[in-house]
Length: 199
Image 1 (cartoon, one colour):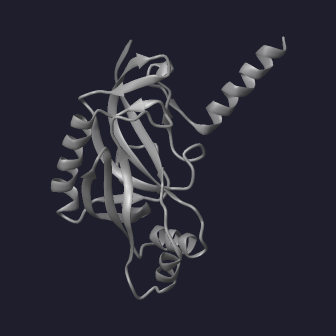
Image 2 (cartoon, rainbow, N blue to C red; image 1 turned 90 degrees about the horizontal axis):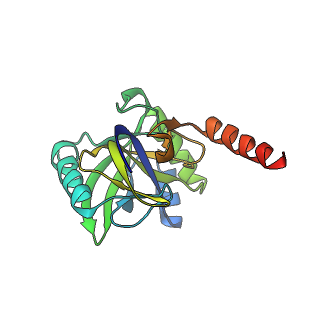
């Protein structure tokens, strides 16, 4: 069963960094660059049950690289807003390079010296594990019991820095026709299901 309604689609990957990056983060006189970050992944079911066909992701990655990365405006926010618009007041990073490696879209991200960027720098300096999360608009099609495939109308918006996908931003539950599910509505649903089982 397909879902023809476009929704905000967000995905999450952990950023890995070593002790040298912690040292770089402490030096505020130098740019802080996160290198070889996995930004997105094709052809593999992700934690949200979505699969991104490689041809669709490759098309969007190429367009994003030409229209945003090359023009130095591939900006991302700290945490996921429930919006398709990048809010400049909350910008923390800029993707400076992007490429495909196998099924992975990888890139380098510069942490900016904005208020939100400085928060990211301090978190990294204190060895706090962070993640990068893509944000895009598109529809999905059910292809399995717990799998949906992102459709050709997908449009990549940006890459944000987040702490945990279960507590930040909006996530799509394809079983509700593309309705945006917040962390609170997800908790309410779990409580409701649990209480129903007790009856």
